Image (cartoon, rainbow, N blue to C red; front, side, top):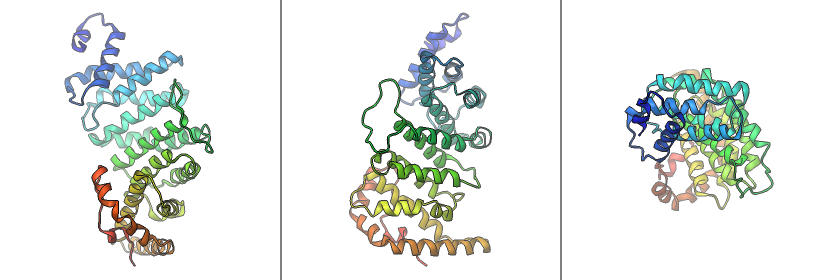
Length: 328
C-alpha cells in the first residue's frame, strides 16, 4: 500500500503518513530497506512542525516514535534523514516548538544511528550539542517533580516529568554505550546527574535505577576521568547504595558493573609515564575509599545473586570477586 500510494501523481499525504507510521510501529524488525526512501522522509516531514497546536504536537510524537522503531543496526542512507532530523532539532532549539516527548524522540532516533554509522557521533556532539541539551532538559524537568512524594499516577495526555527524566537517562545510556568519540570534560553533566540522583533517592527509585545505568556506562569509558567520578561524588553515591540491605536488582547489578569497570581500568598499566603516575595515585585514593567503607565484604555478600544477574540481565558480569577489587 505504501508503494502504491507513493507512485500516485496526486498522493494522499495523510494516508501515506498513516501507512508509514503503522508500518514502523507494528513491524517485527524484519525491515524492508527498499521502503526507507519513502517512509523515513515522509515521517520526518510529518514530525517537522512549526505550529504548536495539540494536534500537530501529537502527530510529531507519533511520527518520531515510529522512526525510533527503525532497527538501530540498520544502516540508513544519510541522504534520506540527516539534514531533516538536524533541522527538526535545531529549529526546536531556537523556537521550542515541539513537546518534550517529541524532542527526546528526535534525539533517540539520531543516537540509534551510531551503531551503523560512526559519523553521526560528530554531528550529535559538535553540531547539535547533545550533552548540553540533555543537561538542560533534565534540569528543567527536575523542577516539575515533587521529590518528596512518590509519583504513581500518570497523566492521560502526556508523560509525567519523572517519566521524561527516565527517557533522557535512556538517551544518555545509549549515547555512552554507542559513541566512540572522546569528550574532554563531562564534569558539569556528571555533577548535575549526581544532584538529580540524590533528589530522587528517597522516593523515586525508578529514576535512580535509570540514572545509575548512565553512571555505569560512563565508568567504562576511557574519556571519563575516574578522578572526576570520585570528586563529583559518583563513587560515594554508589558505595552508599551497595551498603544498603535491600536494593532493586537493576541498581545492584549496575553498581557491581560500575566497580568492575573502575577496577579494570585502574588495574591496567599506562604506557605514558605521566598517565601511569596519575593512575597509581587515583588507584591509591580509590583503594583507601573502598577499604574505609568495608567494600570487599559488601561485594562478597553478593555471591548468591551474581548467577541470578547473569541469567536475567543482557550482559554477563564476572563471578570472580577479585575482579571487583582495587589492590595496591
